[in-house]
Image 1 (cartoon, rainbow, N blue to C red):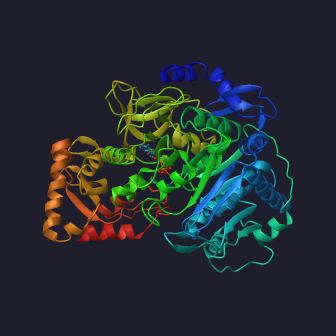
Image 2: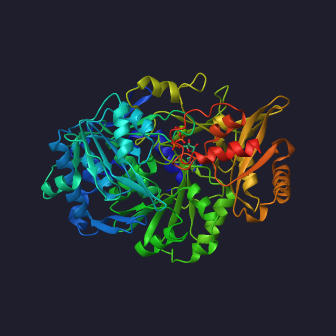
Image 3: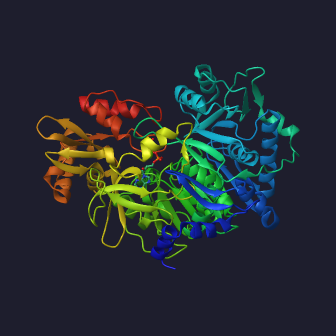
Length: 629
Ligand code: ATP
Ligand code: MG
């Protein structure tokens, strides 16, 4: 079938379409209704059906592949490398579940995870899924006040954590941050389960802190049956990246999510049982939830849990893992690829990556120069994925399991089945035509897998996502997009990343793309800065592939002029940035997204606002220094 017909069917006959996809997972009790949309925009999928994510991802495969690898753990930080078969993973999850049950964690209780990329994090997520507890993973290493606000929001019965993470060879102790956060939080968890990796000393709080190794020993043989959950019970909550402001607590169901992931593994990622999937993301993000932890195992694949950076011990490490584990499907982020772009391209061909069917990239616009660089260097197909924490799986991409649609550089592709995507005029709410810019919106009901609501705040769900387009209850992504004559979409940036220069509306993304096409530039960020004459002007911050030749202020100035000329030629003088500053680091969220709003605030001498999710605050200092200099 062609993708277009497949998509049409999914919208015209939602219930028929998703009833069929639902066969991809095991139902303990069949559902009574495929879809309940009686209370818009709230959507309930597979009503009355009973299933379990852990059962579908692990238990279900025991009969056919108990001894096949399920979880491959690689840490280039500590030098550990271990493989768990499905049977071993099954036992570890049951042991972890037994520990939780013994401590009084039950169905519907929250368990907050503040964990590095270690197998125990995955055990804990699956243990929650097994017993019907709701996990809330907070990115490991977040500062204590960010963690405290999430503890207050989730009110967990238990927290699972570790003594430390490690990043780029440096130990990042967690325990004192956790203790501080619990101190700050209004709602204190009764139990804290600590995994001791032996990386950093820990102060233990008597009666509250538990030792995982000790308890695991006691529950080594534990048998914990699956708790069957109604499809619409809550599987987890997870915060958005906080790129545009205060993070939103996304809440997800059980059955819809399982079906959506299983379907995406078949139609989009094309992974088969017995193969290996490698996502270089982190369990703290949605990609980690959907495509490290749940998706690959639902499809019977092994998943690689990787603790490390893309450049240690050298810039070939990701491809070395592909070769070693014969990875067939890989998932990474443009930000990781831009990091590699600053390294020797020879690393891309130093390993045999021929097992790789495709490399999927998501999380940020994949600019054309970066897409070309990686696809030529690696010689493997690159597939851009556009989606959000809120949706849990791709909105726009290509589905090679349905049809081998060609990809187009710079475009994430086309609407996926289940998503009734429209491009709408921001003010009138009318649909725009081909090649016209509009807000990427989705006509509800949202497909399975998407968020149910904002955790604990239905009103915020409706107000935030369904109230921004005048006169229509549609879901707004808050991203700009355009569709070409052939139906390919292009994402032009976030709706708040548009600048207005002397009456012309420009997407900062377009200017960034243009600047990135200069051979010396590795990556850049463009923001609109208030200007008395023009309303706003574009100001650029660029990171160079190799700053050494441009140390002298003379050559820097010349380079700035060259970059401006590139923009002039490609987009016109109106888009030319007023300044191009050179920095060695851009302010990014821990998930690798550029914090344009913070840069813009600094340019306008305003307070940069909520920075809880920033990766490296020194990047802001560089912006400040560049502006002052
Ligand atoms: P917050 O909503 O808290 O500000 P966030 O939007 O950065 O944070 P995520 O849900 O992690 O949090 O990111 C989703 C956003 O990332 C999308 O709305 C889009 O702006 C961007 N994005 C993701 N994938 C792509 C892609 N393939 N191309 C372009 N943009 C992308
Ligand atoms: Mg967002």
